[in-house]
Image 1 (cartoon, rainbow, N blue to C red):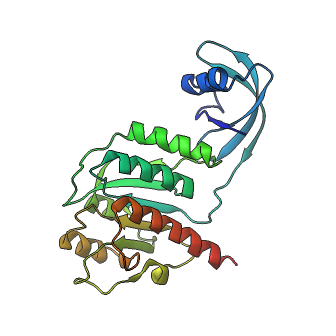
Image 2: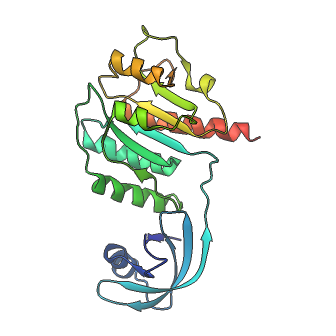
Image 3: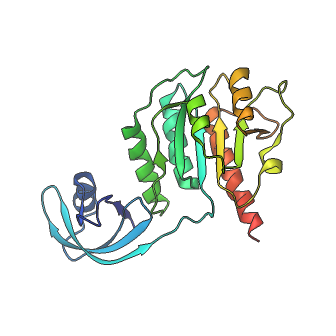
Length: 240
């Protein structure tokens, strides 16, 4: 079943204008049809279409249930935005499908893109959330300076990983070897020009573990997806 997104459905049981148009004009739903709606906060609603208006579909909620994330820990991916915005949008789509809790675009010393339109990114994330049958939308943060982001993390968070290419600074193990299961995780992915040595040193001094994602050099967006998926795989193995 195709799902719809209505972030305020608990207080205002209707579909937003764009979702309403898709529901009625594209999918040809009519009054009396049963549809599924998610609020992006982890709750799934089963609804009956009560009334079709020109810019809104009014709903009667039959049932609401919490749909927990299918992974046990919070996953934050912090990435320097790519110069090519299409690659960035593709990455957001895939990270949402794979499953993360928070996405933070970080501004680095070698960043070529300093700004990001969160509204556009959110639309892509919403579409990916619905397509992958999730009820939770990743928290999408504004562009944040790298050092500010690092300093904002709570002291209790131990799974901190920084992925970079320079082999001369620190001994690195793979993320697979370094990962500690059943803990909230943060992964830092640098820009196309990699993190500067000063940034790596700063992150390590704040508890980040230098890691590699394998012997091959990956694009920024590929590295983010590999890191997130690796955490999912290792977490699922630890539960067996």
